[in-house]
Amino acid sequence: MSRSSVIILPALAAAMLPVSAQAKDHDAHQGHATPATSPEPAPSSAPQAKPIDPHAGHVMPAPAEPDQPSGMEDMDHSAMDHGSKDHSSMNHDASEQDKADHSTMDHDAMDHDQMKGAASPGPEMETPPPADAPTSPPRAADAIWGADAMRASREDLQKSHGDYPLFWFQADRAEVQFRQGSEGYLWDIQGYYGGTTSKFWFKSEGEGSFGEPVEDAEIQALYSRAIAPFFDLQAGVRQDIAGPDTTHAVIGIQGVAPYMFEIDGAIFLSHRGDLTARFEAELDQKITQRLILQPRTEINLSAQDIPELGIGAGIDNVELGLRLRYELKREFAPYIGVEQSWRVGGSADYASARGEDNSVTNYVVGIRFWF
Image (tube, rainbow, N blue to C red; front, side, top):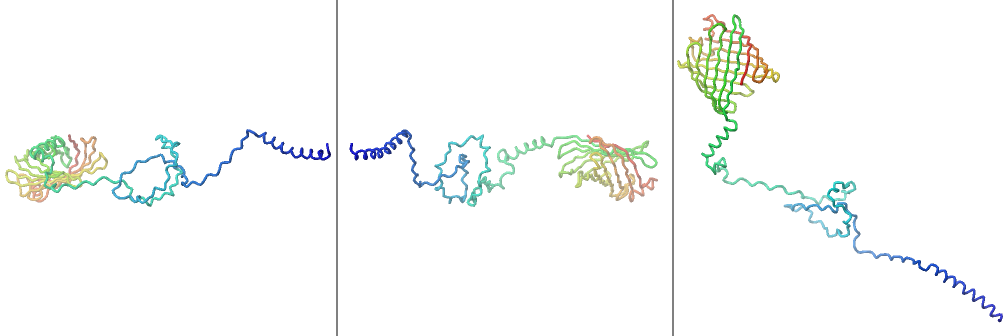
């Protein structure tokens, strides 16, 4: 081998050694594929999807079409992208909707200025009455069945709803009187039988002294007719059952005046032509629900002198009383009181001529009851 060959062979071996190592190095990584780098996506021309609204699956019913434009017709919804929302993960169970958290909702961005008339339409107004309404019958049934037939029906209805007959009795005063020189008694009773508008009334009152004949007594039978919500007009007869036998025609009024004054006024015309009148008034003043103070007044008048009765023309006598009662039951109440009586004018002269006092004070104890 020549010297030149010895020099060339080592040089060739040195040149070939790196190439062989590189080939072996790459062979060791066979099967380890390097993932390819994804290319950058091209910009999409479609708008980006908006965040999912937690209430997007809650489809609300459309409101009724308002009569007037609501002012929301100018809103442009074409730019809204509803196609990119994923509704598959939303819970449409109605039982879970009450648990929705509204605390994260941002209402500041909502523009309420466009909502001008979104109120639900109200009910339609009632149509006005027909033009011939004033000429129609006051009761519709009269136009169908006739006024005569319905009149009887209405009367039956009125009777069944309050105009049925009742009986009522009251002893307004049943008392013993203590006065100077003697003790006396007095009764004042009344009652009625009938309905709301028409009644039969009876009244009786009288007084006397124990151990002596009755001094004054009468009984009345009256027809009573309601002329106002709280007043009755009464007419009938009165019979005196003490003293001279006298019969009177009676006309009067009885009722409750404003402020709860109970009044009873009547005019009497006797069969002899004597004209007299009487007026009574009393008032219940409640101290408690059961303790009641009752002031009372009575005035008797005459149009002429009646010597046989000791009555002078004008004011005959005046009585003022005050009674305090306690209602053990509403229907039963004992009472005590005092009453002062005066004879006036010609009647005082007649009393003096008989030796009687013109002024008498009575202390009374009695009971008041009704049923």
